[in-house]
Amino acid sequence: MTAVIFTYGPYFAFFGFLAARLYQWGILRDRLAPPAPEVSPATEAALALGFAIVFSGHLATAVAPGAMRVLLSDPDRVAAIETIGLVGALLFSWGVAARLRQRVRAWRRGVARQAGAVAVLAVLLAVCLSGIYLTVGYRWITVWYAYILVPYTRSLVALEPVTGAVVASPWALKQHTLLFFVLLAAWPAAGLPLEEIFPLRAVARRFADAAQPADSAEVQP
Amino acid sequence: MLAAAGASRLARAESAPSPAGALFAERCATCHNLGGGVKVGPDLLGVVKRRTKDWFRKFVRGPSAAIDAGDPVATALFKTFQPIRMPDQPLTDAEVEGVWTYFADCTDKGGCAPALSGPRWGTDATADEVARGRELFAGQRRLARGGAPCFACHAVRGQGAAEGDQLGLMGGGTLGPNLTFAYARLGEKGLTPVLTQMSTPVMQAVYAGAPLEADEQMALKGYLASLARDGTRPRREGDFFYLGLEGMGLVLGAFTLRSRVRRAPGTERERS
Image 1 (tube, chains in turn orange, yellow):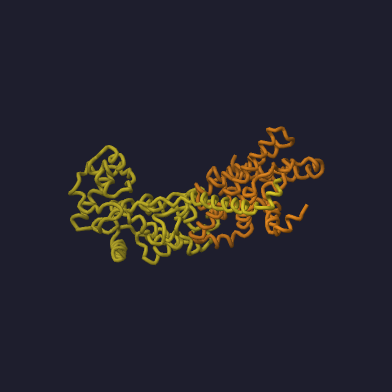
Image 2 (cartoon, helix red, strand yellow):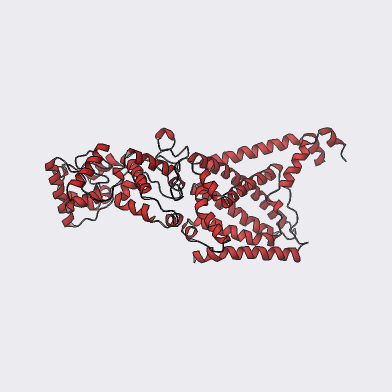
């Protein structure tokens, strides 16, 4: 059963993602969730930095597993990379939790089209927390991610799923992986922009504002 | 130790083992010597004079039960050799008789070397092989077929170069069990199939296209045997969750501080 889920589930998620995306482009273009309520600048920066660390770590290993395996062949390097990754994941979770809290508040106030955003952010938070649990409870996940999940992901892309290692792995890893696929399928349906979890433009704007001389700021209308 | 290992190989080559000698070599010699001194467990030379056969029969079949039942000798042995608990050995009456006779013969001779013929054991590994096994375990030497280094999922005793385990400041992984006493627990017979056939589901999947070479297996067995020989209890691995929390606190604090500093005249205006 688990093998079947891991063989076909990702494709369902991917097609769900595509279908929702197409549906959104064609019909619901004007029905995106309203812009996220404000969070503090520090939380925004935590989201941007956390996302960058977590995403780049996952992506680099998936794209260049050979190079990463060489990089991860030293225990001290692995400990340093894992610690940076854990800090990134904690920052990202902090930011996602703040966004979720604001969305829940908006939903309670009766703001339209918040339920989907709340559900998707809740799944994202669960993905983050299960990742943190894995990192702390089953170390060194960075290394065995390269040997278990990356071959599985690449086999999915090659349309020849090899599920043995994932099926045999701890339940927390299966949960983390399946939650990610649920997130992938549900994200476009909620209509959330990427800016919601990766507010790079907002952070860059703040930096630009801060870099502006005080005199020129005062003469602005 | 090397001389003893060499002597034991010589003894094996010289004579074919008796059934009891082969049984001792297969099940007991990983942890016990007969005249070679204390190993993971006590030296069994003279055990026929120190204990009764009935006590031995009961103990060898259920050492943990004897300890838990408060047997004074078993408890004293456990205190001496803890944290290792000898695994139960379900020997038949005939096997107990044979081994007891073998112990008596060895006591008369002043000692016996393990009498197994065939493949080398982890306890026979040379110092170079042990060092190589440590490097393979710690990922400092890559496995020939590209398999994952052991430290990704397993820890061994201690942390830090000061203790010579070369597993870095934070130690090894925790996906799999700590392998400090794996050789003592599984023995040569139990550990060999783990390394050759990768007998756990995760290992089978991870090493499916990258099995260990024979010399790598020998080196790793040698390293694990060397770890098991020293009965020191492994230390708790460093908990880096708090390190992560501290890192997050520092980054968030820095962001907050930075945004407050920026908020001086311009942001106050924005607020109003």
